[in-house]
Length: 57
Image 1 (tube, helix red, strand yellow):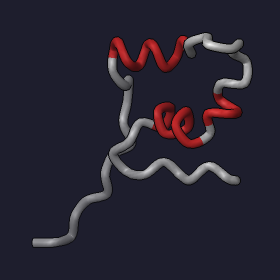
Image 2 (cartoon, rainbow, N blue to C red):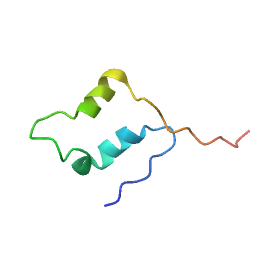
Image 3 (cartoon, rainbow, N blue to C red):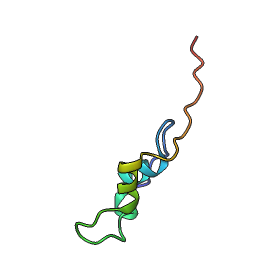
Image 4 (cartoon, one colour):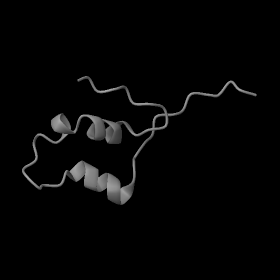
């Protein structure tokens, strides 16, 4: 299954780790936390994909 493209307003890393966690976390052992995910939980997302401008007025 292909990973869906990151939607506007979402963090690409969070999106990839949520929808392709098998590949993103394959290097981890059983019951081992992903350092990137832990960093995101503690410090928040470093960047977000900008939302497309709304044309509704």
